[in-house]
Length: 461
Image: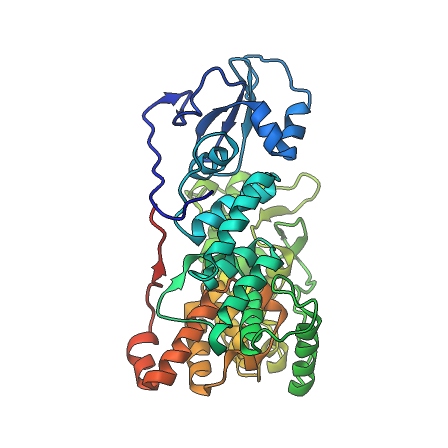
C-alpha cells in the first residue's frame, strides 16, 4: 500500500547515449524493453510485467516492430525504445507500483495526482486502485486537495466523497487562507465554483450533480443572468477587405488575411521588422534584420509561390489575428463597434498586441475591456480571463471592483469562460474577499491590492 510520507529521491551517475540510466531495478541489461522519459532517463523493463499490468502496454508490445538498424531511432541493442511523455520521477514511481518490489513513498495529494494521471492514461488498474485508496484515506487530512486531484482526473465519485468531507460539522464554506494548494492549478474556475455551491448547500444537490462538467443548472443560470443584464449583441470584429492589399497574413490555423505593409509597419515595430526581413528574403531589399533576429512570438516569414503577394506567418489563430489586424487600421468607428467585443477576444487580442508592441491597438482594447468589465455580472469573467492571459493591469482593476462590491463570488453565477481558466486566480480572489471581511478594505489596499508573487504550498522535490 502507498505510504504518504518520506522523500522519494532520484540519484543517477550513469549515462548511455546522452541519456541517464535509471536506478535499480530499472538498469538491468537483461530486460527486453527500454522506456525513455521526457527528461531522457532510460528504464530497462520487462515487457511481460508491464503487459500484465496494463492493456495499453500489452497492445503496444504486440504491434510488429521494425528490425534493428543503424538508422532506426526506436531500437538499441536489439531492444525497442518506447518514448513516453512522463518525466523520470513519475515513471520511477509508476513502475515500482507495477513491479513485485516495495511501493514508493508518496508525500501528499500532488504526488497522488502525479502518479494517478499516467496510471489512468495507461490503464494500469493495480496502480489506479492503490491511488484511489490513498485518495480515500487522505479525504479527512486534505479534503480540498483530494477533491482537486479527483476532479482534475474526472473521478466524480472520489470528488464527491472529498466534497462531503468539506461539509462536515455544518461547514458551508471552503477553507481558504493566504496560501493555496498547488494542485488547484489542475482544475478550472468552473469546477471550483461548483464545489462552492455544493458546500454552500451542505451537499444537498440534484441527482447527477457533476463537479467535472457543467450542470444543466449552470447553463440555465447563465441564460437567466444574460436575460437580466439585457446586454447588447457583441460585435464580431473581422478584417475588412480593402483595395491595394500588398501582403498576406497567415494565421496559425491557415487562414489567409489580406493587409497592407505600410499599416503593419506603422502600427508595430516588430511587424515592421518582419516585413523588412521578408522583403530582404525576397530580394526586394537588403536590410540587417533577419528572421533569426525576430522575437519567437512573431512567427516566421516566407514567400507564397502560389501568389504574387508575400506571406507573413503568425502564431495566432484567425479568431485573434483577424480582429487584431482590423484594429490596426485608423478608420472611424462607432464607439459601440469596439465597446462590446467579447471578453475572450479582447484578452487574446490584447495579449497579441502586447507581444507585437501595438500601443495604438492597445488603447482601443483597453477601452473595450473596461466597457465590458463594467457591464453588470461580466466583472468576474473579466477578472478571470485577464488573470489567465497575464494582463495584470486589467486583472487588478477588475479585482478591486469585485472587492469593493462585497458580493459573494457565487452570486456572479457561472459563465462558459470559467471552464477554460485555472482555479488559482478564483481561489486567491476568494481569499482576498475573506481577508477584507475580517480586517476591512484597508487591509486589502495595504497588503493584497498590489502585484505580488503568488505564494504556494510547494511540494518538496
